Image 1 (cartoon, rainbow, N blue to C red):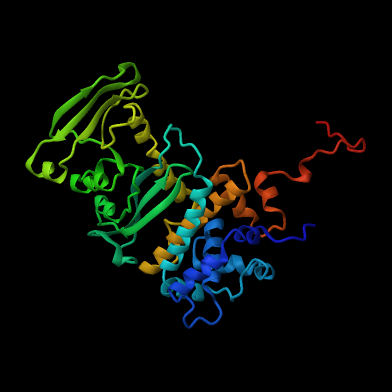
Image 2: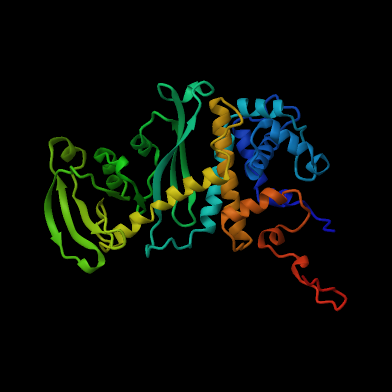
Length: 388
């Protein structure tokens, strides 16, 4: 029998505890706390994410069923749904937001040299949002429509590794374009945006910060052609123009030149028009970069499928934000483990395996790689052959 730690303990050993304590101290997370620490709260919520628990009662029941293993798994406080509910309601969600950023920075270093299918040396990001529907009666602070509540996750994805490096949580009424004001732009980096983010005053800040954007043009774009550049039409490109916006307001909002690229996708025969403030890249790279933007859509689909962010364990804004940030931490922690242990599985497969093996005593690499000594079939001559 394996005498080592359970898999849950091995998983949490990847957490930099000194950084976690700094986040707790920064927001006085242990003020008047006697037994159930912020790390106990994090462990409970991480367990809930990894095992797809439905409610606080579900979390309490499952953890108490393995009571003898909890101490060695890192739990120090008594597990109670009322205690966990109170912690989610009162302890600052910014503790877990800051800690998630620490894990994100670690993951970005690990995935910094990965390819995302486009030959580009600079950092590339995709920015988009997803809406999580809520019940108006239970979440009145997140009013979206007259009889509906919702929160939005405005997310910036680093396309190398699909790591979420910026997340801004708002109620459902906030328009997507307003989230651009929260971005800290990196000079020289590329940002892929869909048409919902076209606000030329905001897009001009990319020029001022020496960053680049790629987006799709709207059909009613009023512009004047300044320069024409030849293109190879066998690649799907139709035109590559340098343009200037035409119109009293937009010309003031964006007084600089723009690059307009027309492209027909050879696979779908769909005609697309792109806008960018980068004039150096080959024209064909612009559609390829925009196509990579779909990684953020896949990320939203992935976290909704594998993490608990559609059903919440608390109804206050603090509880919802806490659960979302811990869910993001679990996602990034799985990505870190995949890279550091060189696991040749998808993140979805890793989480599925962890969901049924957290309290098994076996090396985590053995659990995630799928190898077991029992997989070897004995060829002993004493083995009887069953004939049908």
